[in-house]
Image 1 (cartoon, one colour):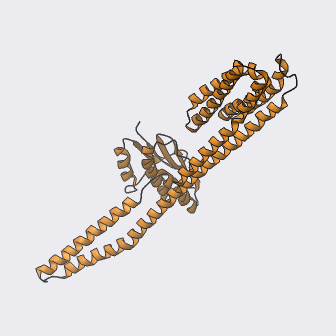
Image 2: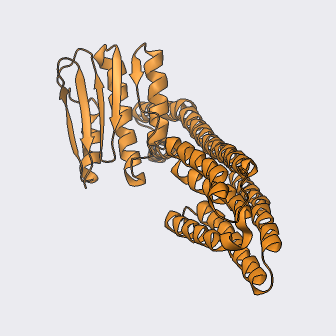
Image 3: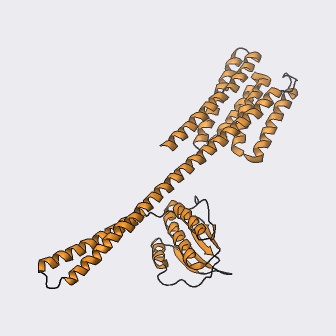
Length: 360
């Protein structure tokens, strides 16, 4: 809910900035009023209203990531500005402070710098080249282009930083929730599981020792033993349910586990390229691979490589074949159920590799 509120606040700020930009069409309208009379005056105002509507539509397209519509609207706004030019004379150049920053914000990088520089230079030179316009350099319009471009860039960087902050907060909350679930599962297993195991063992022992006891007493002891076994099974199932496996959680857990074991961890920090339906399976692979590195490999470095269709855990340890009961059998079953392929064994020049490729 907080993330949605912050996103809505960013959108309202963007719309407020867009409304502020409408001062530029208004200033162009002053030029129309100075140089045009009669029907031309009405036409000029209508064209500037259309320019303003196009700019607001561009802002909405940007918020919805509709980039094709964005460029079409920007082209239309440029055409409308050209049509206004004979009516507003050099005042039309103030519209460059809207058009140029809008284009620069989308292309980014050095292209944006070049575009802003070209727009500012055009504002200075063009009035001196067009007959009937002012022969003085239009420094005012050039400054407006540069200033507005910087303002839009700063606002865009702030919006991007806010988005990254929201994503980081969501990730921290998710990891905290996962850590709490794991803590509850561990407590259930360590405390209640231990007690139920003791009850199961002692009730079985009491039943065997109660030789010659009344049949009803033996039946009750058998019932106690069965109930204890069933309760222990239920606790283990509940613990397994609490311990959800996620790719993000296993990468974070693996990084800490390797650090604690003194193994250099080369693990990816992003996993956005992995489809959601494969992230749990890849999480199991990372868990099994990192656990084996810590327990058996005697390695100095562990590397995890992720693609959209594969995950590989490598180390530079002693290598050797996978032994029975190492946990790979269960992982093979998971991978096979998902239609993937698992390969595990020594890697060159040394170490061991666990690789899973998901089905297409």
